[in-house]
Image 1 (cartoon, rainbow, N blue to C red):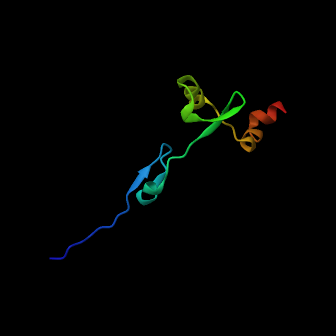
Image 2: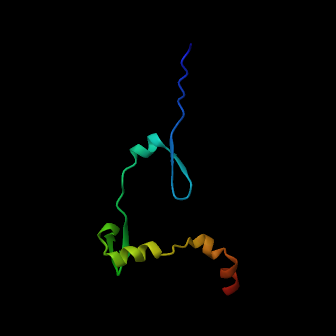
Length: 76
């Protein structure tokens, strides 16, 4: 009797359903995110609870996409 060894890659998925091979996932390191609040850049992990929630609720726009939207063309 022969032994069959399957070498199937393992994957993990992100919030947007992007699949990342586990060997790459293990090599990833946690990064420090900085953002600007009231004129100063600071690490997000040092924010108080209220500012952390504010950062989560922020909406970011891509200028090229925004400028090409039908709504932007109507107002210009």
